[in-house]
Structures are given as structure tokens and as C-alpha cells.
Length: 276
Ligand code: SAM
Image (cartoon, rainbow, N blue to C red; front, top):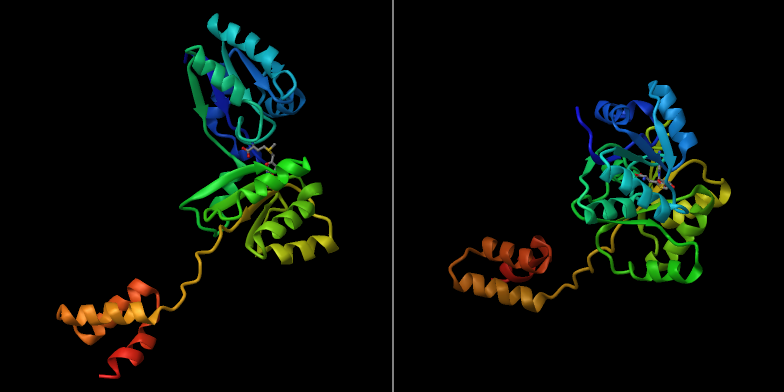
């Protein structure tokens, strides 16, 4: 197979067996590998028996390295981009290189695989229909507070990354903004000590005040609950009477009023239908 352009290759977040056969093929087939940390990727390549030129590509040399990589790809070489773990460009280096490739008409091919955000969410039991990925909170006080306050009214499930030594502080800051929300802590995914902990922010704070958190964590916080419906019996009675006027039975009129106001059917039946 002829390789060309940039391959964004996901690598395991723990269990090496999660590396896809296609990822192995691509790592063997490309001209060179741009790695976040060549020592880490070197270990993976050793394990796979692959010998390949590697260059480092990380937060501090992005501009210079991107230029060199683009030039080599324009000259017909192919590059696999990998990070230390998971999917490149997701809270990892890569976004910039991918963007410059697109700008230069260089083909970008994703080689999909593990990413902690999706792995954690899929096993969290939290609503997954709509979610937001928030990455790491900043360590700078002001941007951290700004980030959290922008999420106070967020209704979607929120997914964060956090380092173990900052977890407790982050949980405390979250509790300040979100209150005692439901939280799932997905720890050491695909590793020996994997745990999916379903708890609340207050309870998690109490737990980690007693024992330091260990390992890698994804923090999944429930979105803001819908406002509680304030019982509005006048509206319910209006809907009930309108439904009767349209020829519905008392039972069906109660059902309709209940559905539209969120008030309980039994309650409405006793108030309106039983009176007649
Ligand atoms: N690019 C990676 C991805 O696609 O998941 C994420 C890299 S980011 C620098 C590292 C963060 O991902 C960790 O601090 C942790 O929040 C999360 N993470 C990575 N591996 C994990 C694992 N095995 N279990 C739980 N969280 C993990």
C-alpha cells in the first residue's frame, strides 16, 4: 500500500491490545513518525518490532517541526502522528499540524482508536445523547474560574480531564459552581486498577480528602437538572376543561393535562374528575 500525507494514529490509553491492526500497519508503512515523546513511542514500536525514523513533536516545537513535516510530506513522504496515549490532537499535540496540512492540501487520514473521553463516557451511565468535552481546566486562577462559571447553566453532560495531583482541587472548585452534582470518575481505564466510580461532588471530595487519588482520571459531571416544574393547577384545569369540551373522556383529559403540565395523573384526577 502507498502511504501519503498525514496519518493521525490513536494509540492505547493503557491496554496495549487496544492498538488496532490498522494502526500497526500504518506505523509500519509510513516514512516517519512524529511523536509527542520519542522515548514513549519508541517503547511501543519496540513492542511491535517496528523500526522507524521518529521525530519529536510537542507543545514547545510545534511551529518549527510543523514546517519541516509539511515540507517532507510535500516531497512525497508520509507521516504518522502519535501522542503518548490516546488520540492525537485531543488535549494532546496535533491540532496545529492537522490544520496546516489541510491548508496546504495535504491529505489527513484518521486512524481511529482509543480516546479517554469516549471510553469513559461510554461506560459512565451518564446521559450520552449530548455532551461537551471540556478538556483540562486551566491551572491559572482566573481562566479556571471563567471556564467553570461559563458552565454553570450547561445542561449537557460535561467531560473533563484531570491529573491526579489536581483532582481534589478541581472537585472542590466544581462543587463551588455546580453544587452537589452527580459525578462519575473513570479511573485507570483499560488498566489493572480500572474503576468507574459513580458518586456526587461532595462525596468525592470527602473520599479524596481522606486518601490521595492515584492514577489517571476522567471526570464526568452531570448537566444542570431541568428546573423543577412548579405545579400549576389553574393551567392544568384549563387544559382538562378544553379537552372535555373537545369530547375527550375524563380519563383522557386528565392524561393530557398531566402530560402538558408535568403534574401527576392521580392528583389531577382527584382534583378535577372526581369532583364531577
Ligand atoms: N489524547 C488523549 C486521549 O485521546 O484520551 C488524552 C491525553 S491528555 C494529555 C491525558 C488525560 O487523559 C489524563 O490526564 C486523563 O485525564 C485522561 N486519560 C488518559 N488515559 C487515561 C486512562 N487510562 N484512564 C483515565 N483517564 C485517562
